[in-house]
Image (cartoon, rainbow over all chains, first blue to last red; front, side, top):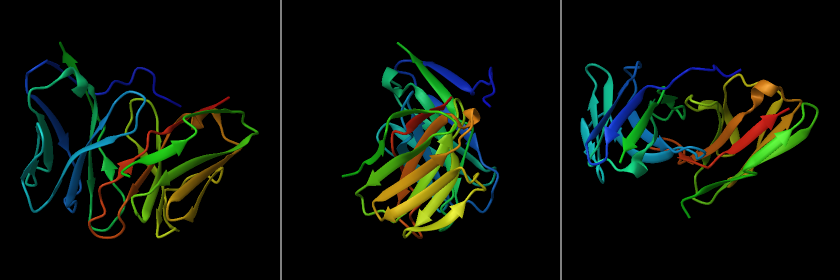
Length: 112
Length: 114
């Protein structure tokens, strides 16, 4: 059954600030990484992805950084807005294997 | 069309009922997925279909039975479920093969088993 009282890691920021959400992965063979945003009651929504031959990729207001040496991934959101409030999941994959391994998730709360 | 649709949005069923969840995509994706998600947890992979063939079954109990009638549709047949099976069931799709890692998720079906 569900674990009552189990809390997600949380990050609380002020509107307009930059947010950084971190993620560690364990499989050094992973070569594909993706960030999803999940709002309450909705399915995960793609934000940005990156392959292992890159260490940085930018989108609109978002940047993903990949450090393969320490197996660390981060998502930076510029000028965070209340609409960015959600749970953010990182996930990693390998080659043509369809399986994505998801991180635990981080709850981002943006205060107006 | 860049959407994955799922029906129904909500489902309440008894432990003796038989029901089905449906998923549809028209992006030409040849890989489709079922995930189960409990509150405050990440999605857990259940099944993967690639070119309409079951390619991954993550040791899911037989009371969950997937079906892929064609390249656009994915069903999950439910029978004799337990209350602990109550969760959000997510469908996703992606391109198949190398480079097909980005999975597009549907909104999910919120299942409650009484």
